[in-house]
Image (cartoon, rainbow, N blue to C red; front, side, top):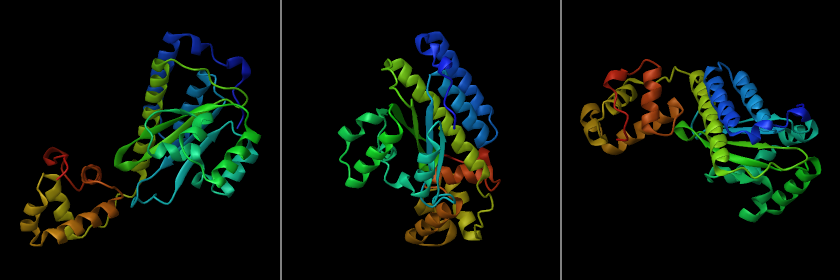
Length: 268
């Protein structure tokens, strides 16, 4: 939870070539990381090159996935007392800074949240309490991944604001954070259960979907009405922990239930 050394508050911010190299180095390190802890450590190191001493990441799983009841939260540099309260009171449920990024696609300064969305009295009090702990400012970035897995990354400073970066710098940072999120999603999916306990009918429907059959054609394969086939597909998605058909096909390939060479990744 220690902040970045003041002596490292970054000369990279003034050097475009160095910023670009740091971004590419981070990208490579992310996709070489074999665990979430190692991946998080690499993001912290990248944040330090930008002179940041605050970093947070929220990972939201889609409905019906095995981990859909958990919001994974990682923090660096935030005061321990605030972090303990945030976890104890489940403040992510009212935090307007993170909630806005469930639908926003562009980064936003933390200090601008009050101007962008109407706040409940509870959220207003939350921001007032937060300002007692942190005097600085930062940027929030949305990240998006497979099967509706989205995230939020906040990067800032405890006692001062981040400078106004040019669009290229901001877009590069957003790209790096998206790469981080995608690798996080990949590691999650690799560790989700692979035994989906599909019955014979569900497996037949999944295989039919994978080779590009429409619901109407699948009806003839399994001998059922369209409504019944669609209920079966919903059951398959729930068991496999995904929210769309292409993701179910991908997970089926990964689990060895489907042949990659014959599978068609399209919405049917």
